[in-house]
Amino acid sequence: MEIQRIPREEECQRDLHGYCDKGEQEICLVKQVLEKTIRLEEGDKGLVEYWIEPSNEFSGDLIAAARTPSNNLHIILADVRGHGLSAALTALPIAQAFYSMTDKGFSLVSIIEEMNWQVNTGMPTGYFAAATMVSIDMYNRTLEIWNGGNPPSLLVNQRGEIINQWKSRHPPLGILNKGEFNTETEVFSWDEPCQLVIYSDGLVEAENLDGKVFDDKLILQALFSATPKLRFSALVEAVKKHLAGRSSHDDISLVMIDCSPSEIRDKISQDLKEGMVEKGKMDQWKWMLHLGPERLKNLNTMRVILDWLHLMGIKRAHTDRIFVIISELYANALDHGVLRLDSRLLSEPEGFEKYMCERQRRLVNLHEGYIDIEIGQMVANNGEILRIRVKDSGPGFDYAAILQMFEANNVQPFGRGILIVMCLSSQLTYLGKGNEVVAYYPL
Image (cartoon, rainbow, N blue to C red; front, side, top):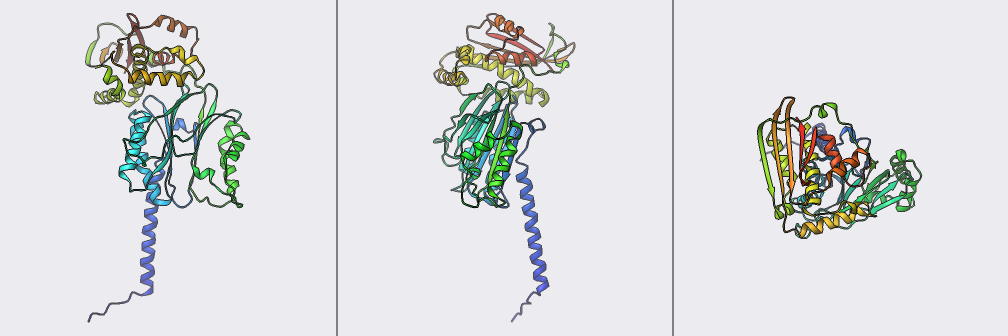
């Protein structure tokens, strides 16, 4: 009969300490991974303020922000069902899809669809995530937003008054499969300095010692009581004061984005504007794309172009600006050339929303028309140049009048896209009746 030795007390304590140390190391490792899901570029740290208060060691709430190649700001606030480590780990595939697809220039709708698929198919049954995602175009002062299961997002002016709010119109990510899931977004255009406030239900469910929750009235009171620069810290301090040092029963997350009007013209470095394009250059390569009605409806055109630019070795420092040039020229060709949309609609009350609805209606019913895109790299006396040509099947427009409007510094709600392209290009030339345009970008 074999006699087993009973471990001495000091050996048990040593093993126990070993297990604890290993557990602490694993917890620290997971925390480091989760902390890296929040990444802000240096230039966005003044625009985006955020706060996450876990109810225990790990937070199931996720806040992420990133820029697209066209310089739109994407932000997501996700609140995963449950608490602790399991909820925190569920947020990781959402963050991965958000960052990778934003970096590649995918639309808000495509990113939301992918995140829903990741949670729906990759997580155990019963896991889902309430989420609010927004794409902000600071230059054109517009935002596109999707809210699935979160409290209303608020847009407040300088005085702390609500300009607009977006209540949840969709179920959380992961509940519905691809065929049932609705990615329809809402679009809004602002015309005064304002701030977008997004928060999880942990904030409005935070209870004080008497069991009273931090409701909408207290949120508005905190927003109204502070100046814009102090508004975020005032709201955070109000919640902390309400909790009175106690932990909330749910994770709390809050993000505030400064949506201030941008300048009409960005300062472009002088080397970008040096030298006009001369004739007789040598082509290094040329790429052409013809898009008919069905491709115009369904193809993620800008993604295809961005992939090609990377394949040709164009550096990221250039592709961001080139992406803006091509996307603006393509949008004008599609909206005004093929779809025949009237820009004056943007000047009407709620014009941007009407414009986008009419755009979607015409695109769905599109049966004829085309856009040709040609991109080529050439060698010039003053270096290498990218030549971008976009032509559409539309009737053209009076581009001379638009250019005169810019010279008179009379910029309307429409026409800003052309102005952006003029700033980023060394030369912009319209041909014929205006349905063909060529832009040159020095590499």
